Amino acid sequence: MKVVLQNLTKIFPSRNKKSNAEVVAVNDFTFTIPDGKLIGLLGPSGCGKSTTLYMISGLQKPSGGQIFFGDDDVTALSAENRGVGLVFQNYALYPHMTVKQNILFPLQNLRGADKLTKNEMLERAYNAAKLVQIDELMDRKPSELSGGQQQRVAIARALVKMPKVLLLDEPLSNLDARLRLQTREEIRRIQKETGITTIFVTHDQEEAMSISDMIVVMKLGVVQQTGKPQEVYDDPTNLFVAKFLGTPPINVFSGRVEGEKLYIGDAAVLDVKGVEDQEVTVGIRPEGFVLDENGPLKCKLNSVEIMGRDVSIVSTHEASQNPVIRSIINADNKVESAETVSYSLKPHKVFLFSKQDENRIRF
Ligand code: ADP
Ligand code: MG
Image (cartoon, rainbow, N blue to C red; front, side, top):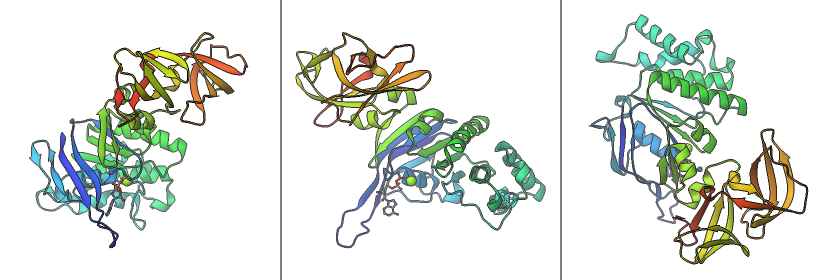
């Protein structure tokens, strides 16, 4: 099911009686989620991810704009009638019910033409449980399950109604690191098997990048950029997006352009054809540094961290806006212990941003 968001906006009235400052939680969000894809909705806490999801689900009413499922305008439709499955961070299972009863619960409330026989319900519940691999645990209570298992139950409960759209709000945040990794792969597998259009909300860029067909990066209620994860990483539209994606994060420097050359400190580090003379903010991806004795960018070497396949070189530079610069170099390179480390730069890993509005300056 294709989902279309058109100028979707949510304004919350002021909570504080003294000020009338309303909160624009979601501001003019327009985006089409293609049928059968998994979209990662990504951004820092408070940027409007949950609000967007709740409007799509029907739990919250937009202040403006429209939502379409396929060609149908569902903006005024109640949550029950939208055919969405919703999974929250905290699982929200019924503690006094068994796993089976939890999964059956949404089916028992179906009325009219949708009403199922007892056997049909059981079959659907077992199919959903098998899909998330908890069919052996059907008689347990939630308290007898691990966090990861509880989240699987919550996913099965969302899937059992065969939703047209699956909405996941930070579903992995309560899991430990290893389970988080495993469960996110599970979610991807389930999504591919069922082909359900899915929106996955997270503040974790690595999580979103690893499982999404497309990502949507938000800041303060405003969509910053949409695209395939790799495309957004390789071609960020502004400094915020460049900084938000990538581990280790992008290295940020103060620089200036003079005579179509980029300077960091006194060194001309790169040719930047067509860019006017100005002060700029420079972002360099960790993999954008090349060890080069004669390289123009000279940094003070702090330490070298061996990470197996790669080596991470930690250094400092006066013009760096971060306390340290982290570069990632193939471990085949030998790093001499010395006071300074010299780099040349891979041009496509270097981004320039305007000092005024932090938008990308292309060269
Ligand atoms: P996220 O899920 O990205 O962390 P939210 O969508 O929960 O962000 O919140 C977006 C903004 O809207 C925040 O500033 C938040 O404080 C505000 N907000 C969310 N829900 C309400 C509400 N019910 N009333 C007032 N403000 C709200
Ligand atoms: Mg949220």
